[in-house]
Length: 211
Length: 211
Image (cartoon, rainbow over all chains, first blue to last red; front, side, top):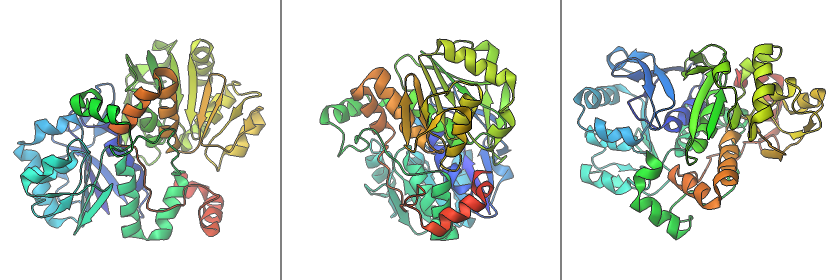
């Protein structure tokens, strides 16, 4: 089972590594980081580099496609090399997935028309412009698409997909292995839970956190 | 504020990237991935490479030290280059932290004697051999040490530390930016919650998940 995780300049690291850490533990998984140009790819903060081992065209038909997000997504929205690869990879994939603003790339490729999908809460409404149905849930399934909300939601998406592919028992073993028993020290992880002034601040200066 | 994240062969990617994604959003943060040899460092599964930008000795006095774990930790337990760096970095650090079996490296460096500390649940008891007090909590603080349980616990540790350094409001903004409102599809993330047969299986074949 080949899993392709797409990298691009200024991606958000946890968007990619969260689902990776779950999905790489699928039985028989071959995970490959792909990019338009192979080599180190720099993240949104500029101080982390993850290596893309292969070019997009070298991995034409993965079983699972994972598209992370991050501030760099906006520069890819008209990149036909990437969008064309997403279309053709999706044509033969078993699962096509995204984390955070990665769903906007699937949408820009024309893949989410009429589909329920989610994204980072600050970007969710943008999905509608591409004909998708923005859905305010943490992990959204529609057909073979699974989209996740912002950044850390990719872990929940990855574990959900492990369960779909390999069964609940295997997924629970992966969860236990990663000791994924989250205990955030605050309860401010969604715009419905965080103090209103913090939500407003992020809305007004959304690039503050996302970049 | 300089944050050094230590990489070594066969580290677990989420151990490093989870806290990174929180800590890099501290005001004035300069995050640097360090290793004995700079360049791409391969993870436990062998299909992910994160780039170490600098040698250990080039970053002698970080404000925050982060030591991830992973199966590769065992090969470092007598590596005096790394252990010596941990001792000298800790001597001037403001915070010395670990995720998963990274705490065993702090312990092997002689730093955790008499200290409360945690680790991956499968490795927790090993801390006692180094004079530490194994503590079954997700994030354990003792003086300037903050140790986290397995893999995903590094996110909770990172966010806890963001709050200590920059205050609750900033930490909540980071949590909201990362949409860290976890909703795992299963409740099997600790040995006290997972089905007993899965716990037993992982105990018996701990390398199955951890490697």
